[in-house]
Length: 288
Image 1 (cartoon, rainbow, N blue to C red):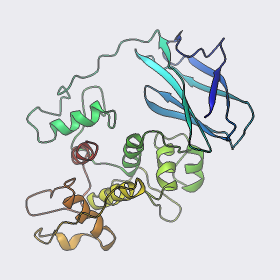
Image 2: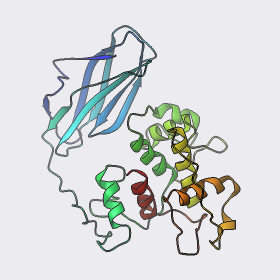
Image 3: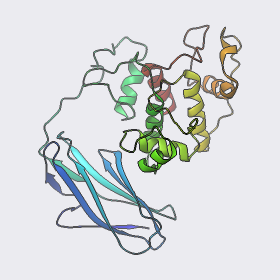
């Protein structure tokens, strides 16, 4: 298994450092694995924010991560290193003190997510799991449309330890800049044939249709070795013929598996853009 050796002057695992908003943070360490190192990941509060390729090295490697403090209370960083045999080492966290407490909305307090709304429980479930965020401190924007970059990012979060590389996404898709928040997720999803581009582009900020979203979800389940054999008869929906040929199996699977319902009792709206509320509902059901 790999090992992580911290620089005791700057990166003592389990310690607390002082830093305010936008203050520079530097984490130094050495890593090694006789099986050959693969990658090392930097996590902030459970989400991967940076990664470095270690290219199969078997000798001791120096690693430096540089980032900036968010200024929020309860901020922590941890490191995960993997080797070529699929073995992992995880560090104890480093806590950052000096941030200001930010009052987060309690369950049910998004001003646009009423406790009586059909999507309330699903929204609070996925927000509580860290899979989706509000669009501001007190809004979720349930009726806003979903983008392709958002879908890749949420599935990336569900997957856990993943391995996307932002710079590789930029090399694969001409419209995915390395510094974009979704770049690492898009690279991971493309590497595992979960998403596909067109003419060298991914269109990460393009709205995604209901049929395209469940097509991507079906590919993710197949990538994880899950069961995608469920198949519902959708002929009772008046717009069943609108489902594209490439999405037929995925839509039937999503309906049959209980992840997606019709937009109304009689329509699927397969070519309609998926809303954040609809997506939250599907992801809540999927991540149980």
